Length: 491
Image (cartoon, rainbow, N blue to C red; front, side, top):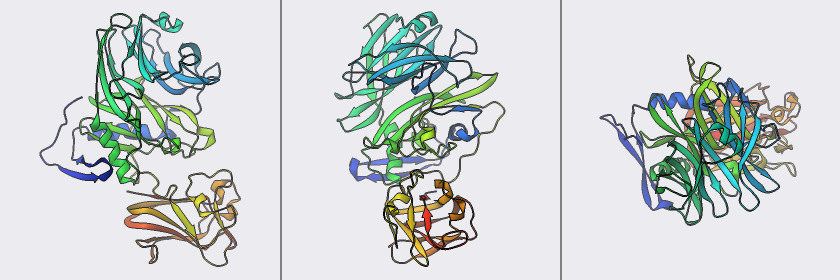
């Protein structure tokens, strides 16, 4: 890791996290890496601006390409290699495929995995004309490293040597490896460990003297600065700090180091995973507000590679899109790439945060049986998941954010967003705020709306409660309000 570079003037915003019984500090200052980090983040966030992409990626054999890591093949010009895992009949296998267009993949071989010995979460790095791979091996969840001396041997799955890395940071599990760097006999590896059998945290280790199967010395240590950078966001969003910080990938960009990393994971809901860009130069992380074509909000297992494709300097990103909280058409592994030579990344939007209203307590002055207020804050616009009110006169939907937050953006998804006739889209309504749930103040009014989605940015305000107040629920009448989602975002 490079040492943190500070300007002469800086300040620290310190957060006291009672659950940790410690003080976490987020350093806020102008750092040399800021420009590079913001540029890289802009490229990562906009799948909608990608030069190429594929949702729900599979290989030619129909295997799901879960948690794919892609690199250029140094032995075959214009060819790319992906390693990924696929579960078949309950068995997790590390598979490999090749591609020349980054979207169509030809299955080559399975590298690992058998009944009772699942192999998952693989990664790969080119080492000269050979390759180093690593994955999470079961049973007992540890990291296994393999070296293949040539492309021919990788295609056949013939290893030159392997090593099972002993768990050092957890007696429960260690996994999701990625490479910082490697040679044919050594490797610098990042990974997660299952801390105290309760949550995933970050670690890093070095393997040296890997000259034959089983040989070599493995030394690892916890990476608490990475953990703290993601815990900061959990605290900001009012989430419990015992959530997981898991998979990540390394990239060097404009001579600075960065990690593309997942965090906020909830063991009982994969829809809570989010992604961040961690900056080792500052010790801070930025939330990545990924924009997909159908509006996914949950992402996991991020990878990133910088390479040359079609004559362009290119960034290749992959993300696992969970079923939970995401449109069905985009779930699975997402592969997308951006040309970065002579282009300007899409600027990161100012309102870049998690939906503060998601799964919070919602109430209303009336609702139709089965179409409750809670369905307007569940992130789903499918299967008729909406709040519907047929109350006479004005109608309202209130969300208790659970704590006082600054809010600068609000979103309403009307009938058309859920597949109903746009004649049912809410016509006249306003956003209101309150600190106590009793006294309300108008924030902004919308009149003569016809759109299926209202997405508004406002001057930041402080509130614990936000309310959607409807004065005309349909385009030509005021019979029924149909709200599929009501969202609020921090600055």
